[in-house]
Length: 125
Image 1 (tube, rainbow, N blue to C red):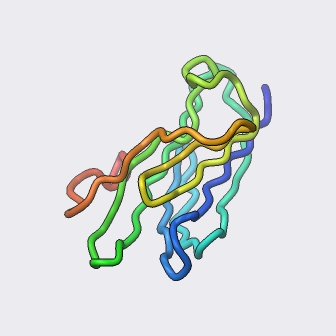
Image 2: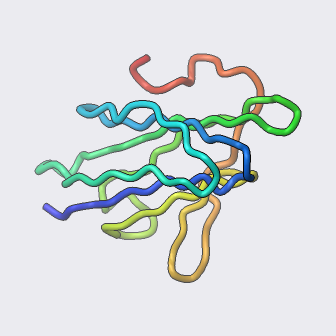
């Protein structure tokens, strides 16, 4: 099975930490606070059945003190990723949402939600 590398980068603003908590069905990678332009990275091999899924809950406070948050899939099986099968994925958290970076630029995949974090905090919690 192919080895995959995932990177989540805080590209918000200087002084704006990004809280990231990533996990799969089998692995909880813990909560991390990323400073501006800091990255959280990990690697793994897809399982034999090809059902590997990683998702991340991310949040940050805007200039008005409001939480922006979302629960994002950051890796699904190669066949289900609309970008094809890439072994190295870099996600950039920016003010509009979460972008997937690629050699020709970036694509916005997820927009932030604002307000109260209800029961969306991580699957299985």
